[in-house]
Image 1: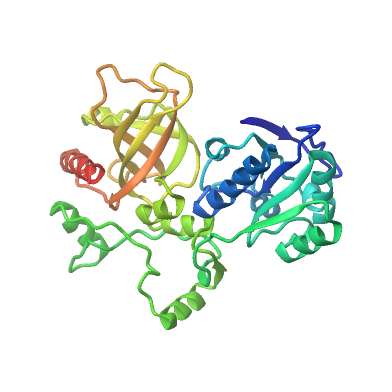
Image 2: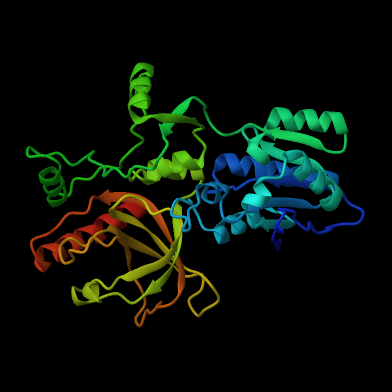
Length: 387
């Protein structure tokens, strides 16, 4: 797959490339954050049509994400995945081209009619594949009904709509809210006492979507209390909602794979090494970090170095090291199981997959108690990954 990065000018106009002089491209457009099952259906349909008509398949995506630009946010901490991973999955889907457009307010101010006209005239778009809730252009006026009307009136491109975003009628809070899971950790004296007793006894329970099993009346009451907005089940919003509650297995069902983040391994304070559990400290994290807790998962080395492509089972800690630190800094640390002698991945780019939630983060009464729990965490992580 060839990747082209495009920069709009001050008027928001993009110099679209000519990809083929004699073939008509099939194009799909979207942020595709998370590339969940709904996105996968759209991408697969675009590639299928391109193969059927023997024309190039083109995926257009944006960086930064449109919502970040419109909100005036400098650092995107809510993206489900990195741009690099989005592009990898588009490549795996079989696209010939991926066009990454730098999203600007000037670009957003152009009408959907102008935008689609450019794709037809410059890019050679003859078929446009979209999800059923897609919108585009100034004021998001280009919804499916408007685009279908434009397609029929001009006859210069066909619109193919894919409706595979899971059940509708689901409501989620507007803002991401981190909620530490309580299920499976019961105690007489509240959450903290319950968490500790659960951990010490080895009791564990995978958190699940709190909306599952609610009656319609309960859902209405919950949605009103949370000031919720309508979403699809297959959506980036639902993935973030689940990850913010530690429901990584439910999130994986929507994504079609385990959720992961990309990061760079840096030197930490070496406290894990002193305790006999050397951890890889993550920095420059790209992707949505789940709620604080301990997880079972995997670490894969990226790039082209000596260990590129190697994948290791791991226990992952997310949160604040309250046993030793008091500054409240949030971290992601990964302890790789069964690594070879001399294992060293400092400065390497890595991908961290979250497969199963093991327990919440708690403060321990000193290093000895922490080490004993870390041993249990390693055993539990093995069991979870072998299940």
